[in-house]
Image (cartoon, rainbow, N blue to C red; front, side, top):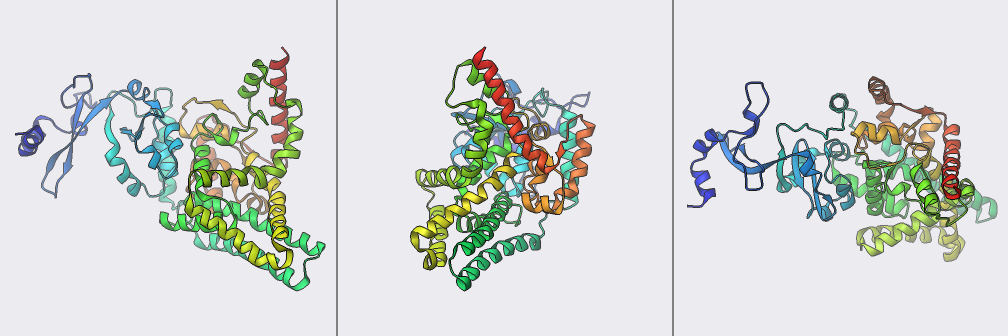
Length: 487
């Protein structure tokens, strides 16, 4: 008889002789390991599961691991991570991960519990994908997080999240989002009606370009909400709406954006994991990258003047050149056929709507004129909360600390909320990415209180100061490069 058959045949007997890890404790109240040591020194644990309500059944045999061993599996070809003390081998599954394989690799060898909860809306559904990847759990004597993390801070943050869930802060007001979508559509229709009624003169073209720019910028913020699944409770509806808004209304790839943006969220301002700070060799940001370039005598451009390049290159070209070309490149190379079809519908719609007035070439010029005008708006809003903040290599801090040191808020006002798409609450957004943005202002006092309790700096600044801090930060980085380069 095979071992598995023997175990099943004697499940009641074995269940008593090898009780569940979580049910057995020493006299001092600490759990002890159950099962037999394996040849490699790990301890096998037998999970007990309910079987049709008839009692305990011997389940999967698990190994116990220490943090030291888990941290050795942190390479792209060998990826383990920990969620709620369970150890998962995600190496082979990483390529199938809907959020992209790099997000998982960024947490390989680490505790990913809070990142997992933050980035997923329906945990019960996502956990179904985790079951086949389970290989073990942390040894009872191991802490639930790496030893460099503050367990009280981690526990307090998780309690805060539970409180916010009980307050229904993760439930969306659909009217809020539909009004924003209506705003976008009304602006686009208004532009066509004005053009149809008054013709395609210069003044009319300038006016409709302004209307379309506002529409596109607000579209950027709405797609950002939907990409984080903060609109609908069902993932499939969020995915479909994201295709419509990002691909059809904006003409950019939804998959490209998600795979890029999710990396930024899980490891903000961390080299080289956050693609948003991978702006070399054109710009040097933070404190470490400029010194590294300077010591190696690297000078691709005149970095002393990079703050001027920000005005002349980054602001006007972020949307029409960098994002647009990168989106097209990724769609083609990775064969995102669905996104290609949706993005094609964006250009078809523009040619049908504006082609009779401007022709094909003129319509293309209109599209990129709007992107050109929109670009400074989006560049300022997305960079003012991150570029001036701390940038570093991987330090593997807890979720709260990781987000707080890399983000800052902008003072609230009706205009700031609208102009930034509520990204003036960048701290709350980074801590709770799936939270609908209309709830940020409600949770901000609780987040600020938690930060004060643990001595974390909660930064909230005026919007004009935030704009200026981008340039001041670039000047500081340039100074660091100069000192290292000319020493």
